[in-house]
Image (cartoon, rainbow, N blue to C red; front, top):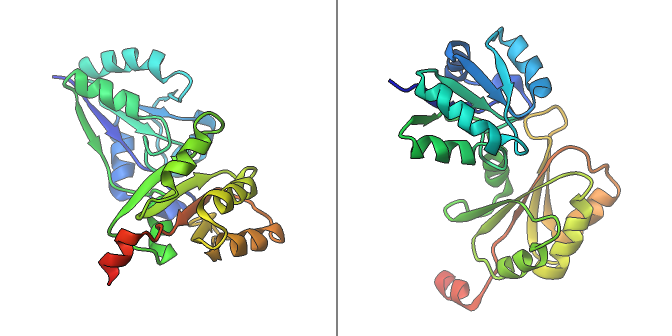
Amino acid sequence: MSGKLYLVPTPIGNLEDITFRAIRVLKEADLILAEDTRTSAPLLKHFEIHQKVFSHHQHNEHQSSNEIIRFLKEGKNIALISDAGTPAISDPGFYLVREAIKNEIAVECLPGATAFVPALVNSGFPTDRFCFEGFLPLKKGRQTRYKTLATEERTIIFYESPHRFLKTLDEMATHFGAERQISVSRELTKMFEETVRGTVEEVKTYFETHPAKGEFVICVAGAITKSSSKEKD
């Protein structure tokens, strides 16, 4: 009998957000795959999880997946965690899941923390229809992506790092318009959690005088087009 691959969400900040089930699965797994073993070590130590931990990240996942599949076929149960949040959501995991499915190995994703859900709910924008874009391409394809999304009528969700955040707001002002409504959440679940709402220009002005620290989730209100205006009427 093959083992099972578990995708285990871990807290994005507040350690209290891990589930009892996640702790049990991690303690029962034959081994744990971590995006960065150094980052995950304090979490595992805090919950007294002593399983062997191996590195599995975007730079080695294609190479290491073959060996992981072999372990799974031998009957080992393996748990995959990322640095924070749910694996495979803007983190490594997709490729390994796909390979496990190809090899008819059971895959189970536990429910748990992910940054975009609380940011979306906090935004006040429609939650019935939205699109998650994650991190925009750094260079190639970035402008094309903006142009494609400029007329998107659903709420759009992006992730962004602090050192690119203000530049990204400048680009959004250019492609979406400075008056487009956005909601920016940072440091979610942590001590200095903050959500700032307003136009692109207003939010940019705010963060020009307040340190842009932590990881950011940017929710952008959907574009108002002729078709969406008729639906509202």
